[in-house]
Length: 118
Length: 106
Image 1 (cartoon, rainbow over the protein chains, first blue to last red):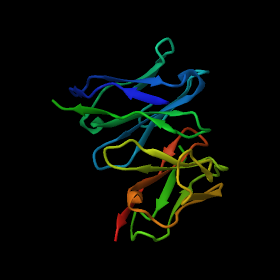
Image 2 (cartoon, chains in turn blue, red):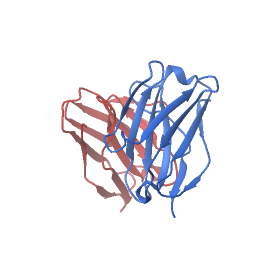
Image 3 (cartoon, rainbow over the protein chains, first blue to last red):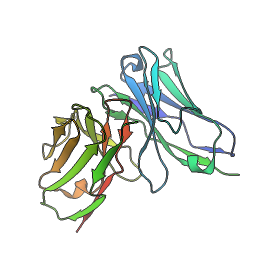
Image 4 (tube, rainbow over the protein chains, first blue to last red):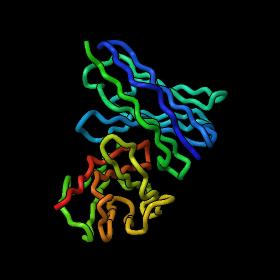
């Protein structure tokens, strides 16, 4: 069964960074693309960025491209997203999602709650 | 970034109804349009990819159509488990979500 398991909830202070990881099982990440998506409470889904793991190509939403970094560890079948310069507006549920279906995210992690508070 | 706009933002319907949600892109995107279902506290679920292809395990009452700038998600014979929020997403250049359509029980 293809699954993504995300790291646990985080509480961070404003101005710091957070790293969310996403470990795949039942399939090999290198053969897929990964989206990162977030949803602040009560708001819409917001796309953060996307990475083609085989080539390393990435694309970020304009709102995030200055402060988001993607990384991968193919030895552990894990990808990560790091978001820096956190503010209260970054408090949200963060999802990773794999595209093993053409151009669409068909495997989703369970979500990681990130809370930014002083 | 390519923007996609959904309408309506919400609708009320009854079990057994047919509902239609539309999505319009600011640029021509061929058939690179997906539809997701999202329930609070759960991960989004892919319903339709490449405008009209039914994702694995999704009931056939869900269907998608359209190309280039105008797309439609249709849910025939609405079931109780279908009351949720639906998002379109363009996958032509990066990815962008629409603002969502909440389907509520009338």
